[in-house]
Length: 58
Image (spheres, rainbow, N blue to C red):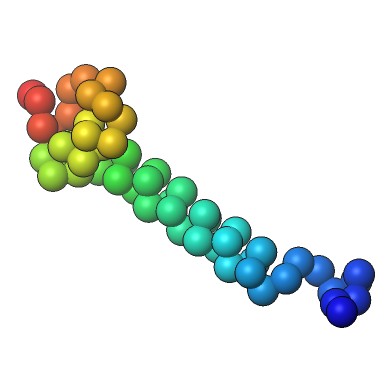
C-alpha cells in the first residue's frame, strides 16, 4: 500500500494535469474568439449560443 506521505496517486496526478491542460486550452480558445472565426464558432457551439459578437458574428 502507498505510504500516507507519498502524496496523490499517479492516476490522481494524471487527472489533475489533464484538467489543467483542458482549462488552459479553453482559456486560449476564449482569448482567440475575437480574432479567429473558427475559434468563435467553436466557442459559440460549446456554450450553446450564449456568446455574442466575436469573429464568427461581426
